[in-house]
Image (cartoon, rainbow, N blue to C red):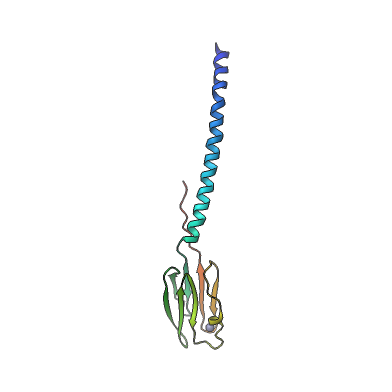
Amino acid sequence: MIDESKIDRIKKSRPFSLFDIIAISLALALCIGVLIFSCATRVEGETLIIIQAAEGITKRYSLLEDQEITLHVAEGDLIVVIKDGAAYVKFSPCRGKDCMRMPAIRHAGRSITCADQRVFIIVEGQSNFTVIS
Ligand SMILES: [Zn+2]
């Protein structure tokens, strides 16, 4: 009696293990899906630039909003332009104009520095992670 019920249980347990495999693969697929989704949202998510001026004033601007930012620096106004998801220095009163020659920045970690006017612009990668519980 006892043995038969054990055999029955083992027999019945087999399809369940198959279900386990399906469940695990489903969970894996879900994980991969979440990963792809989080990557996609990171790309599409709002990217901010941090502008640090000489006075220690740090401001954040969205790269999604086209705008012109005027910074009052030591020798006049430095103009930062945000256009089509990228930022660049349109005008700077600095001597070298190196910052104006720098290519537009759009990816996290990229920066433009104007050493002369002590302005530092960096793209901050804002993470839009959703906490998976
Ligand atoms: Zn400069």
